[in-house]
Image (cartoon, rainbow, N blue to C red; front, side, top):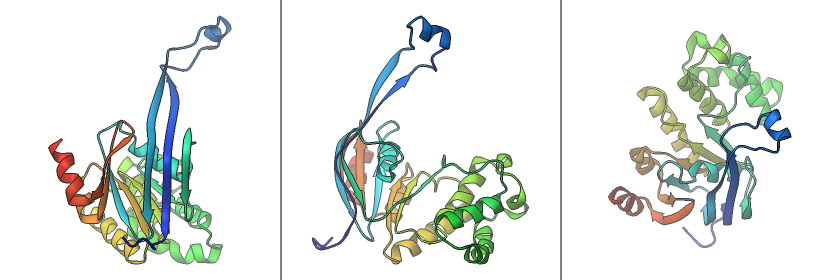
Length: 241
């Protein structure tokens, strides 16, 4: 990557710490001065990296290594305890747990999602059919979200999030769902996104997808970067660990 390439994401000494309690405190216990046991979690501990415009970077590591927290911190979904994270534009976060409106149909979620990305009503209406076709949800598109499986939700959210090819796309395991046909469609759309100089940060346990999609990999362990480099080099070390 050229030293003059534009930065899409720049994180310096990023730290994210938080406290987790065993259960919600009961009012009677609080009145007695009793609180449930708490655990202080240092999810991300002084992480520094840059991602350039048009670059696709994979993020790997075991469960609990801080991958999802790092992506959420990059989007601003969770506050930083320390350090700085600068982005070229507001990232689009695509995760299997992303919030959609349960009481609305898939079609209505698409309309709202397109409007939220800055389209006018007429533009959203014109694009909606294409997004619906991409989901492959058929008649389910007019059913309420609360009837959807996790895979159906992921299809819908992926179709909405990538409809306008966001400048920065952060993906958290969202390609691991759906059948083979939908995964292939999703991969093709990401290829189109990268070809348009889009920037992708991809968290996945699917190392084959990382190899196919990413030229570089960041390996996290216990909230720290173990290795950051070319895909094959990092994954060979990761698989041997």
